[in-house]
Image (tube, rainbow, N blue to C red; front, side):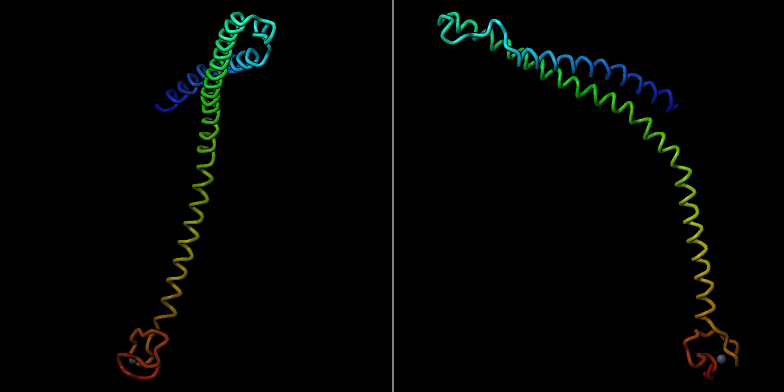
Length: 156
Ligand SMILES: [Zn+2]
């Protein structure tokens, strides 16, 4: 159930992401070039008349605004496109790791668990042997560090 949905998402993300990224980059380049490169219609101080200068200035700032808008929008599109493509590409990788790593992790966890179980069993068995000792006189199970049997009171 999950797989077809997942690959559909992946395909959709790439189908949207790649054109977005490409268009964004193109817009950024066009915007940057038109912003940075001198335009023949740029206002020229001392050459243009006052009216001409202000008219050209208006057109120039409008051009610059457009370039900046294009640059900004292109950058925004490229970032979103990049994120979409990146997500569509990294997801299968993490999925791959998740599925490929799982058995290894399970085996590791199992062996650690078994090791703990074994050492735990070993420990408790040893603890029984160490702590409990049979009184040689009455057979009462007394802790080993006790000097006298708590039942019969004789020295162990
Ligand atoms: Zn005893």
